Image (cartoon, rainbow, N blue to C red; front, side):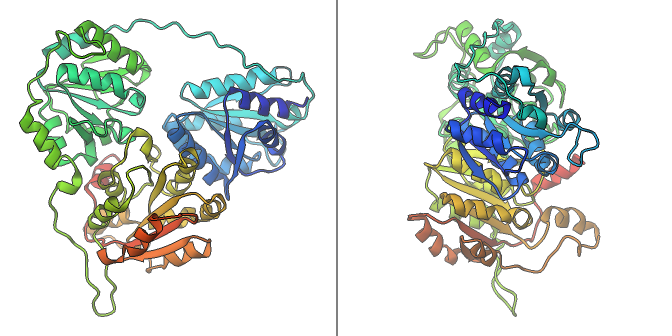
Length: 552
């Protein structure tokens, strides 16, 4: 059996069921080996889109995603999506063919490339192909983005046939976390707040029980939005996207426990959200992240669920409810009512800045008004995927999601243009849900080629474009200081017509009266993607982008 075939069989044997990519000569055989084993191959229009599809799939499915690309330019085309995945610690294996001869036109230094973007690097050897492929998959399953080098001459080499079984991996001994300082801090707190991040996405149940035991309020970083959906003490996203009520309550905390969150500048509003007098604790399985973004008072090294369970045990809390645990001071009926009344952005009053058509200038719709109307129309069983840009807070804050798997936030690298392809991967992972890709006009134009893929797949996909005919972040950052903006503003473009040219249904929305076709499409059968070009007013910049630019 040739090595390429062994690699495909081993990856399938470990659990790979979907592989995204663009096939060329270097990855032809390994991709076909995966398909022959039973995996589904999703052909993208471009390697950059394929990388984001694998990323969105892995985040939404909660399993390892596979990306298959050609050697040389296939790898470099995928680099931005690969960087986003690596910075987000998305479990992906990149099948990266290698031209190992330095004089080859296709030669690139793959180990250096992987290291440069924070990915792990593994290489397949002819005599250990099954072992090497399995090790790469297991490394990804532990939370890494892995570039798997497949030297061209090695792929073609003949090696021992492999048909399984998957080797048993010895479990790593779990060390009991040192929780005494955290336990004492929780017992002493009267206004505790838990902020859960990406590393706590699988820990809703134990964190909820612990919060109930100690009277903590619950919040999340943007990457974990939806984790506590439906909980009456959920404040939703902390940081730049926090509601006024969430900011008020987090600002009054005497204990903040970050569960799987690095408390970066977005989550803490550059440190200003958390009060100086609060005790700050960071819990994470990776001790290397302790204190990287701000000083913390206590650290606990350990997997989030295990630490929460250990604290619950010491508090005397079992599966049936509290034992001798404290209850805090602020879980009152009055606060519960305030959270119900003011805990969502749509309940926060605002002045509608939609504009009417006048003197040949067409109408525009306030993005808050648009988002509220859209949220009312969408089924609750949805996945929301958000691209980067000035617009990004509107779908992130105004569109509800049913759970943590229902929100995909492509912001680790802050690259515009990854949202549409990420949404395609998410839709493949959860075809039972309506996937909503929220993008700006700049990101849409960058990635519109992947509408070809969306039409091929016939997925239930709604693409929503917040179209202000500009790179809005730059307009609102540089415009107030009088800088020229001709380089970042553009003539109005009929993006719905572009979408129709790709085979999608296209619709332009300028007012609240334009949603009828959206309602009709949502009623089914949704066999063609719908692209909604929302012409939004651009009267003001977003405060979350003001926060972002403070970090530059």
